[in-house]
Length: 401
Ligand code: C5P
View 1 (cartoon, protein in one colour):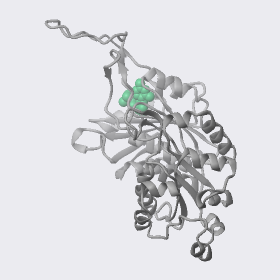
View 2 (view 1 turned 30 degrees about the vertical axis):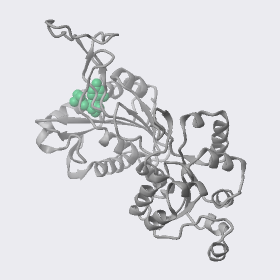
View 3 (view 1 turned 45 degrees about the vertical axis):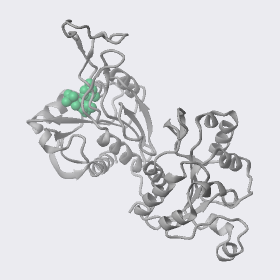
View 4 (view 1 turned 90 degrees about the vertical axis):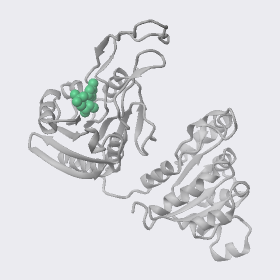
């Protein structure tokens, strides 16, 4: 398990997002971590120490001036006897205290006393997140080496409030913890990688678009797997509903042309993996206004034009990466089509899979692929998309070292 033998000190401060910390404890524990919770006064207004302790199955620390706790552990040991201090949710108030070195309760004292890495997951109203004082505090904390996950954009607990300020989801936070505590070998350290993922949306008018089916799961998993081996990864993602992977720089795009520009902007690079299901065509001139349906009118005829082939462009580019890998989602003649694609696109490797509906691969968690290269074909059967990603990243590391 990714976090076995790791001890996380989880500081929960007082915001409505504190309820998500209950799930976070479960996520950390299912990865093998021991979790010791510390709760501020405010946090106890939102969730009870009883609920937190029931999930962590450890003592919950709440008071700085507790004779018993000081005798048993003491706040200095609490601050040091862990592998990471995680603050989730981190309120604007606690961040302000951290930035200014204040220590007037157990949470802030532990944060001042710790010599361990600290990861914070802020959660607050968007106006508070945008406030100049918060921005100053965040800049200070970043320069002090504090790591951040989120906040994310979206709806707030307050009705009608939306913007940046939601705490990252428990899974994202657990992944960020894994990333920070990862001490596995890094064969791709010093190497850069570009990965494309997801579909592209090609507008017909401001509300309609053409797209391929793609969840982005495989591409995102590959970006994460390359980062885990130490590569500096840029993920260029089309519109997807899954979160950005931890430890990766994600550039969000909509259209194929935007995806191409983002990819070319990242050259030179050592590795490029093209997983995105790029729409082959776009509407030649998309309408500025919504095309209205008039009773009795014939449906509009869409004039399509070809999109740039990003893989092919990069495969023949003067700044071509050392390793260029493409995907081929096919519904028939998987191997032959894959081999033809290798030639045509200038790739070193094609990962080909059968996406006919009966395989359940499209949108599902599992995959089976054929790795086609100049040296032959290798079949990887019935793996999870994460396993495909990890094996591919290992193969990339082998080829580059
Ligand atoms: O030709 P086809 O779309 O089947 O090729 C699939 C491979 O090419 C994938 O790796 C995909 O990401 C890439 N591709 C691309 N730009 C396009 C079309 C496909 O990068 N316009």
